Image (tube, rainbow, N blue to C red; front, side, top):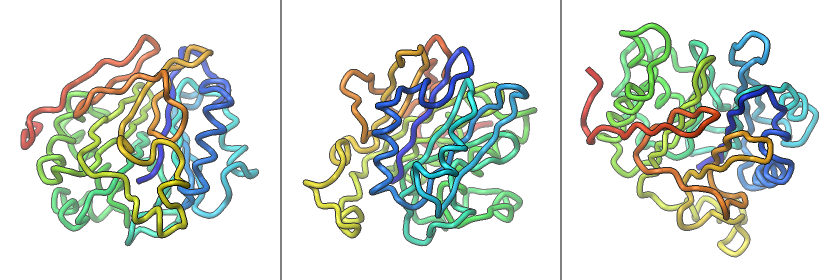
Length: 271
């Protein structure tokens, strides 16, 4: 139920330059509703390593946020959290998660979490640090990397996500994955609608919601910024001229565009 944004560029850029001041300001403004923490991951411009920063308590736009957004990078993930029941605001639940040199963020709800844990190898379940379904989802995807060196490619990620989809047929499985050599986007929005009751519990009725918080709430769209960066984001910001991504597809992002890998039929597993 959270909001996500990322970019990839051919040269290191600060976040505001890469996506544009207006987009960044609109996205940051969503924190008035998605108010349970923020996080970011970026590729270090000097070493190529993935760095992360975030907080469950400090404000969007504050000193810690500003400091985390300063480093120029060729690629960055950005996240605003709307906490699900059972996974309260806490440091261990902040996204993006960083495990094994890869950063991962997910928007949606995969429930019941116990069924998701049942998909994990014992060692992956025991290594979980928080209580989110998103971290368990990352573990399910990451566990497919064990037979190969490094993190799997788009076809392996697509097969792993299809395995989760087979169990959770309507869940939103949208995700963004950043490594030292790749940025991958999972667009698997599912069929659940926007969590309007949860929004209302926070004092946001239908008339007071940000744009994009009704029909099509979990759709991902892409554009190219004025600085030539490829930008992908969830709804909630002005996306009038953006392109909707294909459903049930994993995309490998490059400066030249988005290379799609269709997810296998539901129930297919990575060999």
